[in-house]
Image (cartoon, rainbow, N blue to C red):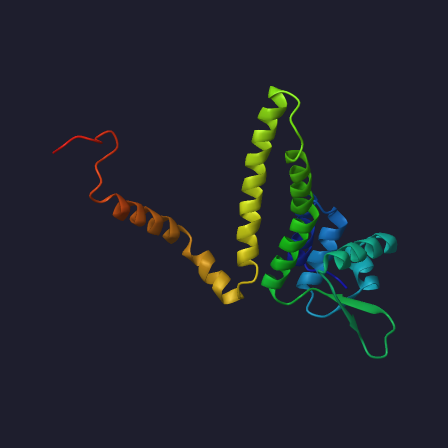
Length: 192
């Protein structure tokens, strides 16, 4: 398996970005290769294309399988395992979001809940606990929002995303309508 310069650029970049996203470079490169491959790819093909050791490829494939980001395929007459990624990019996004939530957000919420149940020992603890409560409330609100949208059909999610700044304009219009007839701030009690 030989990668074109375009494919190589994508795979290398995805590996670099992977390290910023909390996965190692090898895993990022393997995923990028599988994502753009038109046919299922064997571990041997990945070793050849990416010039990686077989053990690195095996560990990377296991990591991607643990995330649920790979589909296992079998080719008739071939005993090797072949791998692909889900076809639907939105399915991939949903898998990634759910895994990141499970691995990063849920443990943070658990720790915050535990800490918030403790009695503060002094004023500094009380202040810290107040700040942690604010963080907990924000994360809970965001996860509630995530829970609401994660089950949306892809078409509805696309509609929501394309609304973009229109939502802000709608809220601004609502605010203007709600303030019609109300005196400006600071004018309370003044009679015109």
